Length: 576
Image (cartoon, rainbow, N blue to C red):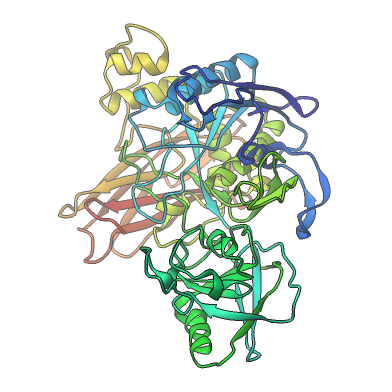
């Protein structure tokens, strides 16, 4: 959590109010897992030259807002992250005067009035504090996105354009490339190579799949000193091979490996259907197969993509808000790390590597990237509301491609530089959020919990909501029954934060047979902070057979600014 004044870490608190886990012996804000250190350094870490993990990823490391100060609030323990601790941490952070709150945790989506992150972030928003949250790591499956309240900036994980690769050479001279974070350099030119099914434990007294190198299925005598080729990628194969004194691991994954885990022995994960089949054929057609796994290197120039693990929409709490909001780097991120934890999290003596930096992946890493970007934007626009900062980041994001369309990418890949001058913003105040909740059917009791007052009545709202979503959100989203035609209207108001005298024209991108009209299609501003309203009318036939999502976009252009809003229509009753 950030405070944007003066030096670095200014405080650290822990919350363990329920005291229901006897295993939590070190009750302190100390980071014993590395996760908090890593995320904090991404958001606001100071500049560190020649940072690396054993030379891998070497370069200058810095957070998104390196001049910001950090206040840490520890809420998670062996038993998890309790609602009581979360709410207490939000209360303290707000009282301490933080400017941004970065929350790299989540859980199954809950109704807003029973979700501690939704409640805490609502109170933060009331005090002018933007809360940024991770979208979750349950992708690529539909309806898994977390932290979906409209006042939260929900962040998906994308790659950064840099890829870590771990080369392999076979004894026949062929070279293949896999992925991992392998910190070890080979001590020999070649090592004996064996597959899991050939290294099976002949006693047959264990259960599992030897081809996948399941624990207990392999013979130590057959594995010792050899590189083992294993089908699948079960997550603990490297530890299994190490305990059998193997020299290395080649995993063949049927799912594309798009991020690189740190391994405890020399390891590399390859595609099962191409490279894996070739390695298997080599093993089974050669008397003495050999291989060597080299230390991980990196290459750049990769087209950014949404990580397979990043949770996808649509969200389950309200069908009117598109989540995630945008994407930020969350794949193979080099960041600070706690020396109280090994870099693989395997305990000693299995792993004895303790480092100040580590390379991790997850929406937990994407979230603080967005927090740092938000703090950067806010430093240039101190008067902007949380919704204004969020709007600037969303409408200037770079569109991305994903099989789930905007249900995976949101508005696109974050671009902090462009967000400094968005041209127009979609602002949302407290009353507008409350009106949205009333429109969603929340009763007075539920809204009282969020607002923190008693006796609220939705009938007292002066300005009722309009359109299908009833909120001035920077993106537009509807869900349509599978046998229904498409019909929706969105009402929006934009505030001019660009140049005083400017004319914006609407540009629509939409698939064939989907009609998207903007009224008016030209916005003429005469001064800064002027507000103008428009509506978007969408009409179309029933979804074509086999189509599950329709993507369109509205872009306001004044020749200098491109203010883009994604429009996503989802056919209900489908999973992609």
